[in-house]
Length: 286
Image (cartoon, rainbow, N blue to C red; front, side, top):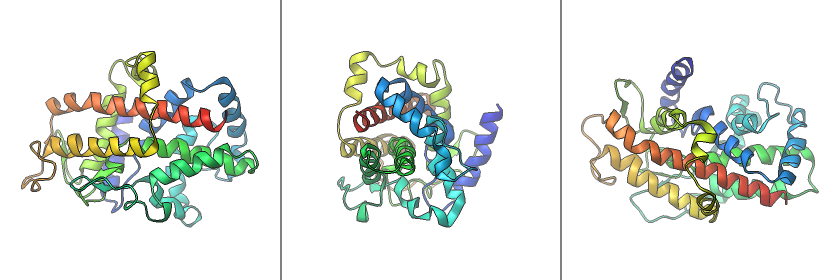
């Protein structure tokens, strides 16, 4: 209950922000990291642990990164350090209009978007000639950005800042809430925590062959998949099945029946994110 109350307060704060907010809140990012941790090779796990033990090199004492769960939320935490890391603000998303053709390049000027930064940080992590500080920072960004990409509203929108300008209510919770905050927080919390929950519960829904299949593909493939979910589920679910139709005249409400339909979608996304992250780390540290 305390966790949910804290998330509710955070959602109301995030709803007022004029740019895409932190995807999945801490809970979602931590779960993606837990799933990845469970699927690392022994070699990759040893190197990840070695880098994490050097977290002091980042010189961000208010934003710890000594575990993979910490690293998963580090890129959001450092937003509070303002000018020091302000260059990374556009790396968390790439909102491609769901009512137009998928065009990843157009949404990624000069590589400043989530897909390009996933690929860049995977290369940095793999480069053993770099200082540990650079590689640790790359690891934290990689863990976080793979989670971001699997929050559909960080991949597709209707020109409304990832749903931040699409007002919507979560049951009886309304106010300044919006579509982005619902998928970031309330829906993700519900999807991850309901039995069987957490990383073990989500992984249990994927057999060995399904896990292997889910981890395949390119970053562009994953972005296109998330973009499609944004259109076909995030928007369509609150717009009468017409994601590109006129905006609702009255604030739509995500009611319990709809929540139950969308929970499996979010559970799959979080699980895919963790499995794909594990693959990227394993390959970078092979």
